[in-house]
Structures are given as structure tokens and as C-alpha cells.
Length: 493
Image (cartoon, rainbow, N blue to C red; front, side, top):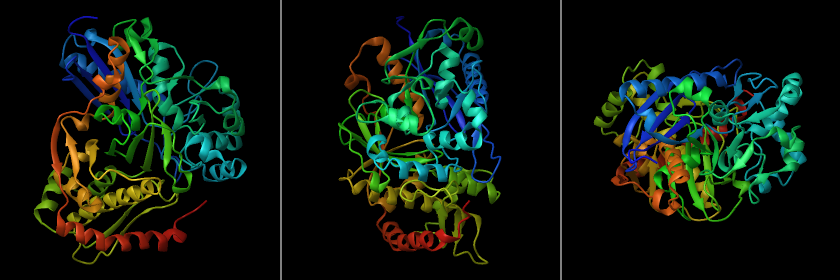
């Protein structure tokens, strides 16, 4: 390996593909982000065509090559991360048979319910009960509603693994992304024949299972020509985005915990063994590193609710608007917001839940609504902590990663709502792409996990504001009562 070798991480997100190249000192050498559009062909549906991901990957690599000439030639290994739970069906000609059904798609409610009834121990095997967003119920939905498509499928993949196929010609996945399919026997780290058969699949339709740092294949001549990457360099299994973020922030040992604020949000706790807690809708999944698992509360609505609120209220600059909201020095918005724009997973398992602003009057303005959106997102994290605490203690201090963690005002609201200090690390917004770049490094250097997957340099610690904490604690019962009261009124199929 050359002295100037670099490592590439590619994250197939929901709103964007992000690519990051780091050097041997883990310093960024090049990066690019290409936005993605989501199709919503029916209420509650969410789809993207897999070809969009490949186009975005190629564009991101091209942008980095232009901005930093010669950088792609220095890449020694590649790691892949991506949005979890999406259903990518591939036919005999190795082409997608339909757009991918994404993690925030709620069409498979009935199928999830039927799976839980037919397999009462599913949550113990797969780490969490079936919910509409997971891959397994989506396959069951396709069996009923699009049987010709499912019958023509020779492979069923997760989103990032379609990009892997185009890079390497190999069908493979990592343990974390496999866990999010709901088809994995978590304790054994093997596909579960029982669940696979229950949804109408065969084991040979599923990708090969690998640990995150394992080499899954090498860049083919065709992929090298299409991307500018060196032919033959290894592509590691990588990680689902939740585990990838954990690897990037060094959450790889028992008790390491962090909040991830992206399009969705998660509260992630690393464990040294498998600890299912299906009754609380806590996800107990295999980590993307060997002999490690994690518990996670997964919320479908993260920092994206702030961007949405800014958009619909005509705010042109979200960052400036958040600064303006902070400058008001209001401990709490006069408005309460239920942030369930995509439904909700933990703790409600309710794809039909919807967003609601409550308490508006003639004086309500866009900054009131934006602050309410921040507070609503923070309240989902309070519910997340409560869910995880049913299985055991949550650390008194949490870390935060993802784009939503950048703003000081947002993090002060989160810290105050949780009543916990929040650590932010230098480069914490790099997210999953940085985590899988670390996995790529592990694959080719032979270094120990403990020496590579370290915690980054501490940037700062955001402390709770006592007055804001008291105001948010007083508002929390109303937030929860609003959901309970409105739940029967949300549209249901």
C-alpha cells in the first residue's frame, strides 16, 4: 500500500449520497454530497429507484476528482454505508425490477401485523417485532400485491448493496444491514430460515453475510471505467448507517452510546452480547464489527423536521432562522409540535401518525413553529431514552453525530430535554461515510479495531439549560397527551 494511500467511504442516504476520502491520519482529503429525490406514489409510500444511487455515486466521485486531481487514484479501499430496511428486487438480468421501497414507507402495516401473529417469537429472533418499515413485511406485501415482481426476483438486496454489486459484481451485505431486514437470526448472525420462508423468500435469494471489515469484492474493470476508481481495490462489507455512524464516533465497546440526528434519528447503545427487548420496540441488532451488538431506539423523524418546517414557512436559510430563534431567548415555543411526518417507530410503531402543530394563535410566526419543531424532535429522543431504560441504564452523558448536531441551539434544546450533557466530537457530522472509511482501512492495514475505531477529538460539551429544562419537562406531558388523544384520528388504511 502506498504511503499516501487514502480510504473512501460512501453513504447511500435517503436525502443524499455522501462520499468522503480520508488519509492515513483520518484527515479529510476530499468530499462530495449529491442530493436525492424521493417519490411518493401513494399516501404513506416512499420509493427511490436504485439507478439514482449509482448516478449520484458517480457524480460524487467525479466532483471529488475535479476538486482534488489524482485523489481517486490514491484510494486503497472502499467502505459502503446506506439507509437501512429498503427493499431492492433484482431480476434475472441483474436489473432492478421496480423502485426500491424505503425505510420510511408505511404500506406494509397489515403484513407486519400478520408476521407478528404467525411468528410470536419473531422479536426474540430478529431483535424487534415486525414493523411496516422493515424489509421482511415489504416482501410479504409484494407477495400479495405484486406477485409477478416478487416471482421474477432472483436477488433481494439492501440499498447500499446494489451499489456494491455495480462496483464489484458481488452480492453481499454486512451484519447490521442484514439485521435491519428483519430476516437475520441476531444471536447466530445467520439468515433465519424460519422468517425467510414466512415472507415467501428462499435463502439463495439473499446476499452473502459478512462482518463489516471483511472484503466483499474488488472494483471491476467496468466499474473503474465508470467511476475513475482504481481497478482491483477492495470493497469491504461496510455497515448499515446506524452502525457506521457508531464506528465513526468510536461507539464500539460495551456501554458506548450516542444520538444520531439525520433525516431520521436514533439513540444507539453498544452491547457485548445480544439483548433483545421486543416489548419496548427497542431494536437489538448485530453491530458491523464481530462479536458486538447494539440496542437502538429508532425514530423516523430527525433533523429533517426542521428543514421541512423552514420550507413550508418560506424560511430561506435554516441556519440563520435557528440563530434568530436562539436570539429570542425563549425557554420554550408557545406551540407544541408532534413531529411524526413519516409516522413513528419507537415507541409507537405507528406508520399512520402525522405531524401536528398545536396551540397556534394570530401571533404565531415562523420562528415559533421552527422552535416547536426542534422541541418536538427533542421530545422523540426523551421517549427513546425511556424505551432503552426499560432494558437497562442509559449513560448519563451522550454523544451526538449527524448534520442535525451541528447547531448549538438545537443541541442545547436536546440536552435540556434529556437533562443530560451532550458531547460533540470534531468531525462528528461526517457520519456514516467516515465510519465505513474506517472499516475499509481495517481491511487492508491489519490494524486492531481498538486502534482504528477510536473516539475523535472532543469538540465541546453542550450542557442542559436549567430554565429550558424545566420548561420542556413541564411541556412533555402535553406532547404525549396530544399523541394519545389524536391517535384514533390519524388516517388508517
